[in-house]
Image (cartoon, rainbow, N blue to C red):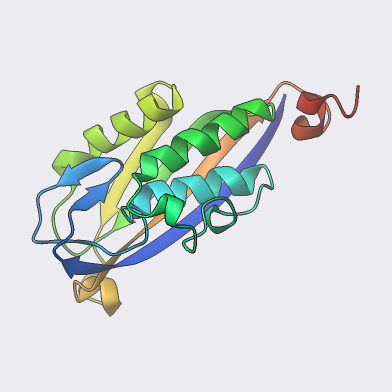
Length: 173
């Protein structure tokens, strides 16, 4: 069994007039994240971690913000498509550990729904997804309430003895 890890990070500005969406969950708050899509920093970090683990680049390469196709798209669409590519290349998620950095609002009550949404999107059990939230103790742009960020680490596994993407495509057969 082969394993690989990936790390993802994303940050977006908080603005008036947008819904706050994290982990595919709409969180009641007076501000939302600004971005080309729904700006879900948690899902964006997860997508980059998944892509990084298998060497498939980053979200911007797959869903560029210059492409109007992705304007206002739910980030769960991105997660679904990326995880399908991960599975097709011979890998599967062992676990995901993510942290959301936000001064406000408090996210503890929303973490189970975020984890459940992301797990369902990928077709894995909820216990493979762990979501944490923390503040920056008032420091920096996040502490000032101007933005939110997320960091994510994933562990993937593959039964292929060689590089799983090549083995899944039959290149090394």
